[in-house]
Image (cartoon, rainbow, N blue to C red; front, side):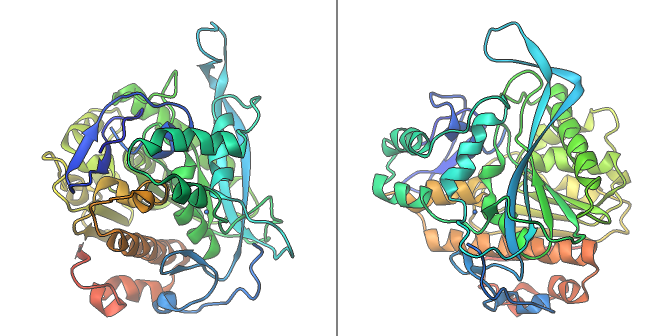
Length: 424
C-alpha cells in the first residue's frame, strides 16, 4: 500500500511494514495539502499547573490518546495577509496575478465560553480552500469527507472509521475571545505543499499551555508545488518572516518567538532563525535539514550560516532507516557550541509519525496497518511533551521544564526504548 499525492517523498508504511517513498501521483486537492509530508468545547474547570514534571497528570480534556490539554481554553482563527512585494498567479492559466497570499491559522489561549462548539477535524481541512484564493468559499464538510474517503478507501482505510475521525471534535473554539496575555509566540511550519491542518493536535496542545501558535501553508514561488531549490526555500522563509512581523505586532504576543517545523518546515524554520534575532528557540520535527540533499542545497543559500544560529535547538528525529542519506551534521554545526541542544531520536518511527493528521486520518484507520499503532500514538504524545518543555524552558524561563529536559527519559515516565536523547 502506498499513498500517491503531491509532495516529494510522501511516506506511509505498507501492510508488510515496509516503507515506501512516493513522488507526484494522482491525488489532488484537500488530501494533498494535508498529508504531503516532505521533499484539533469550552473547557470547564481548566486546571492550573506549576511544574512541567506534572505533564503526565490529567489537567484538561484529552487531545490525543494519553495526552491531556493544559490549563487554558483554546481559540482558533484565520487571518489573511498579502506580500505586496511578490506576485502570485490567480487561478490556473488565467494570466492574472495578485500580491502573494498568506493565510495564517492561529491557535491561542482564550476565555471560557459556555456551550460553544469546538471545531472538527473537517473544519480545519475545509480552511485549505481559501489558502491560495481568499475569495473562495470554504469547502463544505461533505466535500471534504467525500474527497478523502474516495482517495483513501482504495488504500486500505476503513471508510466508517475515517468518517468518525473527520467528525471528531477538537479542542479549539473558532473565534473564541482571546485572553489579554501577553503570551509567547511559536511559529509552526508544515511540510512541503502542506497546510496547518497537518498537525492541529500539536498546535492546540501548545496553545492550551499558554502559547500563541501561528501556522501558514507551505506554498511554492508561483504555485502550490514547492520546488526543492533556492527559490522554493526562499519562498517559504519569506512567508514565515512576514508572518512573524504580523504576529509580533499583536498585543497578546510578547518576548522572543519560537519556531518549529516539520519536514520541509524543519528547513525553512531554522533558516528564518539564522536571519532574525527575534527567534529565541528553534525546533525541528524530522526536518529536511537532516537529509543530506536538502542540507547541501541549504548550505548554498545566500545568508546560510549554521554557526550563527546561536539559539537553543531541539531536533526530533525518526530513527527508522527510511532514507540512506540521513545526517545529523546540522545539529552539530548549529551555533557556536555554547547553546543548549537536544537531539531526540524516536526509535522505529517513520517520517509521517510526526504529524497528527497523517496518523489520525491514515494510520488509525487502516484495516491492516502492519504496525503497532499504539506505539506511534505514544511517541506522538512524547513529541508534544518534549516540545512543550523546550519552549517553556527557553521562552518562559520555566525551571521545572529545564529540569524535565535534563532528566533521562525514563525518569520522566517515557517507555523504555521509545526514544533517546543526545544533549550538548
